Image 1 (cartoon, rainbow, N blue to C red):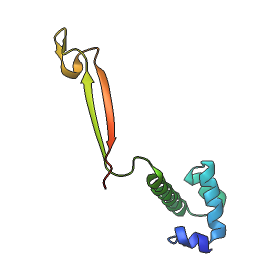
Image 2: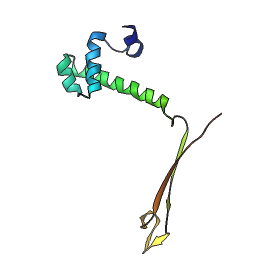
Image 3: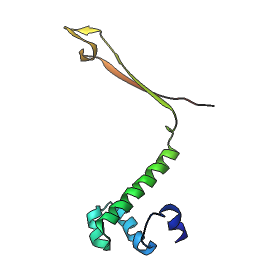
Image 4: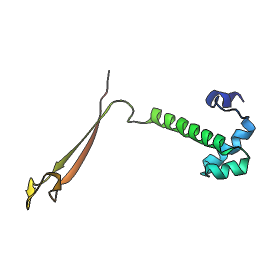
Length: 105
């Protein structure tokens, strides 16, 4: 129970009831089907699923190369004018998109 309380202290269920819900989440089952299979209320299963997704997102953000300050910019390169159309509407333009990560020291 020590491992469970460290990450999921918000749960008001035992680890024995939490593990099947987590297994169903890993299998990609819906919350409704998981609630029917485990006997836990749909609201509780939804809450568990949301919290697990939040924990996964937090871990992904910590391990991402793009964490920190990023700058993004786009430009269009090509003919200035094609048969009366100007700007982005002109045919034959190439879109260039760039990301820059600033290293703050």
